[in-house]
Length: 529
Ligand SMILES: Cc1cc2nc3c(=O)[nH]c(=O)nc-3n(C[C@H](O)[C@H](O)[C@H](O)COP(=O)(O)OP(=O)(O)OC[C@H]3O[C@@H](n4cnc5c(N)ncnc54)[C@H](O)[C@@H]3O)c2cc1C
Image 1 (cartoon, rainbow, N blue to C red):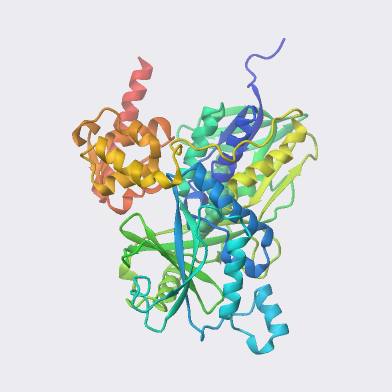
Image 2: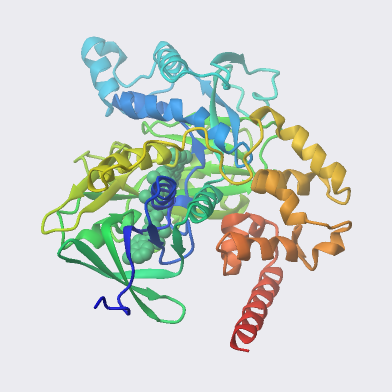
């Protein structure tokens, strides 16, 4: 007799609700596999909400000869843009140039240049930047994004915030993406295709039992234990990937912390800056959340994934000093309104510095001792969909007859409109809900796309959306995020799925916390009746 208390066997059990775990779960569920995913905190609570939020090829990786990665990421930008025109959009990047700039010569390009043109040692000449941008324009089959142009800075809006010594700049294209929302939408789509998404559920052990995996989980709120059985295990634990496999295979992960600072808006146009530093690194300054500027990032080795990454004073000063070499206005710590940090779980390729460690991904299947395990190392937000396809290529041999690739061209929830129609969609929303001001309408379209109509429902006035917690965050929106987007705590809402924490007071966030607790208590009471 079969044991009726034994958990049902699923095809795949995924550890980790970051972009890679959710991307793999979505792709696998869409191919008909039964999938369970466990995330120990909120979705995107680790690295996948702490990125620079660019769908980019990675201009600087060209200097490391990472042509495969750059080409794949460049091609992918437009595929992703079409699939999610609400949460991603094209951006222009201004790269100021000055002939006296000198650079550390650690990259393969700099070494090559130093050998064949020794007089150039330490310099990144203008022709090299133009060559890089030429490759960037042409490696990845652009259709939507405009190519590189040259800018005269004096008298231009792009030159206005910069020091007078910068007369010339190059301008190129990449894309922005709301990283935390990208994860949530992948999880929602995976769920819609049959996956079971368990948040606040930590995997405490995973052991092989012959042809199957036996996985023990713990609900981090209640301590309740669960047992799951799966034919294959996917370890997409990000910074914890090494801990999860410590007893299974040799750990090959290098943790590199990156921090960002946020200031009030530093300039009046909507382009980003790409600044080159004297240490061979680069940083971005990016228009952020309509009224702010985002500056980052740093590259610091970070030993312990359980140590919460924070932006240290040293990192703050590093980013401020870097930006101060370019902006006229000299920034101080007083200008910083928020910081965030994340840990890159990079594949350890033995590189000497954190900056040089590869950003490419590596997938390793381990079948030693029975049921298969797939470990995911590295990767970028930009390549998550391709990483998921590559993961399914590794998974497919264990599930004969599995259907093929499907995610390119399939939109994420709310993304079913043309990239070029975003302004029109925002105007339509404002016309149908005249109580929305411009900030609110733009915010809703960028978060929910065509689903903004579902969030707002029948509302005729702002009051119809229930309580306003501050900064246009209403009860209707909070309910939507709790019901449809796996949100449970205030930080899930104000710091991940929206960034309204930048505009809300502590008292307003506390009031939201009380409201959520009361709603949860009501829900529990109703369930107990
Ligand atoms: C500073 C910085 C800037 C970046 N900028 C960019 C950029 O602009 N563009 C780009 O393309 N990429 C960028 N990246 C890279 C990108 O953010 C990461 O590659 C990506 O987010 C990694 O996703 P992941 O799913 O592997 O890891 P994570 O997002 O960390 O997800 C892993 C998840 O596993 C969960 N987990 C771990 N152990 C367990 C367990 N035992 N049980 C249950 N759950 C568990 C964790 O809670 C976590 O949520 C950046 C990274 C950093 C740090």
